[in-house]
Length: 125
Image (cartoon, rainbow, N blue to C red; front, side):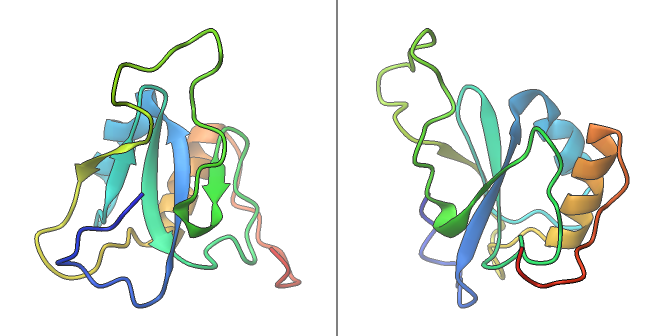
């Protein structure tokens, strides 16, 4: 996933992936939405590097360090459309930061998963 050139990602970036069916629901509830990428199965929110440190992302969430998705969302029984070999850009802010604030995103993903946020005391992530 590549950030549009007009946006500065000075903090580095990772991506948080969630099932596609939750995408619009989450986007509507965030105070600010950065870059969002999507494919047939998942939407990916760009967050600052290290946003996995100190939190336990809930089941159903995929955290991709460096926004590198080693294993695409689809399975061998679900073939992607031609040209859909990587997530495409769904949303980008016109100016400013490419990041979605990770804490509100984290709290929303926990709520969708039906559990409370779980903070880790050690910073190992």
